[in-house]
Length: 90
Length: 523
Image (cartoon, each protein chain N blue to C red):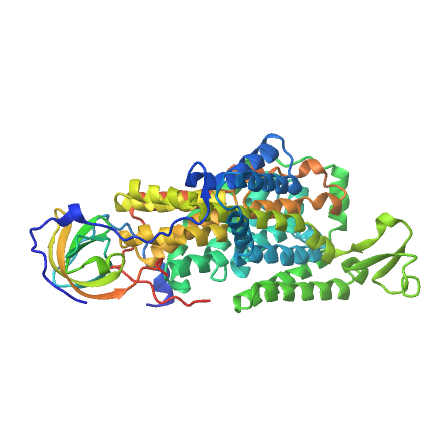
């Protein structure tokens, strides 16, 4: 991305509930878990991450989106791997 | 690590979701709970309001007494060993951020004094008079120049000190409203502190949110420029509506007559500082180059003598005072009161000695609040109760960053303290590093220059208190009481407002899925 386009990026209003594309792979932070699956919030969109246990909470994980319902802004996805740490953990 | 498909799509596991635990227990315990650790800072703020706002005493020494009493009384609320309380004060006082601020003040103080003594103010007055810039436009122009200067050198504190010493007297003499002028200088400092890639708050905001500095600056431009455009219009309108002080026509005429264009040679000194800072030089080195150039110009153009820059006033009975009396930097004085070191360099430093002590003590008290848990409990409460959806989360980030920065005098210290909480709230909603860094630094820059106990306002006021000694026409009554400037720091209030609107509307919001910040260039 050129320097100039960086300055133009973000001059827009972004939705509280962004849509997710089934089949796409995204990196998200997992907010909480029930032990076997986790939940990530992308804005007010909720994504259940299958396979995200306690070790993934507050970590950034790569998820393949398997299902998304635009009317309720909720989706499902499968955990692929942990890709990053939170910036406040250390 | 990947373990797919353990929960079927129909399950709703929401009831059992548990977040992560990251907080350590507080190290200093207080009777009355964690909130009591805010006592020293709280006491100081009340003292500062009573002293500076209600009784209109702008004495830094008085504020030192206020924070000392707060720290002493706070100790009696400590549960268990008092040593940890004392050690925490030291821990706070030895943080690099406090020393960085002090260094910026002292270096900028010397630089500004050299320019002042070298006739730069006279040069500005001459230029404004010749170009026909009247009192009404002066605050708006000052805002723009302070913004450019701060963006160049990266230290809003240093820029405030320099501009209060140079542009403030010029503007007051030309008939601009002093309160508005001070507000315009602080606004310019906020603009630069927020946007400059070399500003310490910019760097802290980027590093704590795992974002690259270049990307952070580019992405925050939109918020800063919107606030600045409105602030500029505000200064133009208010400049026309608010009248200046009555300076005796005779004094004005005398100063105007003695104002010469040659003082403007120091524009080069200022450009040298900006150039060195932009070239990546450390701020100490950048301002030092400005100081060296200013000394050379002052001597080469006969603007001051060497003795005006530094002068030893020695008693006649000192061993080597009489034999070396011919030196241009030595004066033999008869009266004991006259003994001492004077000159631009000394005067430049002197105004900030008390302030430096005050700031160290405040940072010590702030550390008590952090280690005692008041800070944590406030933020934990806001995360649990306020950040319920993305809009509220962003509003909570704006509010908590603004509140902590309004309380802790040195904004970089406040930013370091709250950075982890901003990332915690933001990451929960997958806001990207740029958005988090921008929300954090917007409030940090703004709140550091608004309230009477804010570092920027204290520094500017300290610089202002020297002016009556510099100019015959500048009387004590022309000083701006810090509380009066609060509503006129347009850039600060507008920047906070822009972020509130941005949180409500989603303007500028970016999620991690939209764009990830690049790797941080750690400094």
